[in-house]
Length: 115
Image 1: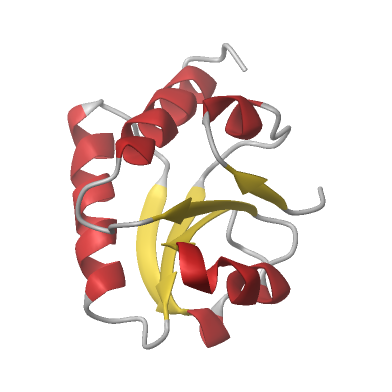
Image 2: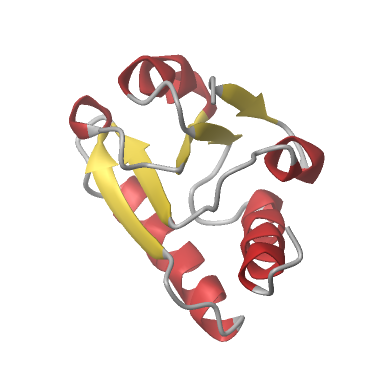
């Protein structure tokens, strides 16, 4: 599937494959992306979702295994070049984004077999 920028849940809903590997990507793959990954990992755990991994990486280390890539808005274009088949989510703040709840809702729906 070609990449797509994601602005709301309807864009994620159009993704045809399962979301099993979520990657937070930043320049160094440490710091802010690690904190964002931790926030989303906790939300996914609280939702009772299994078989979904949430990791953080440097943009340069992205690979085709990523189903969904979350980056800060100014880094999204670089991430798209590294993982063109992933769904890309741009956020303003890794620590607090309403898009995380939309990701959890979509992954939960998929896990329940409704997608």
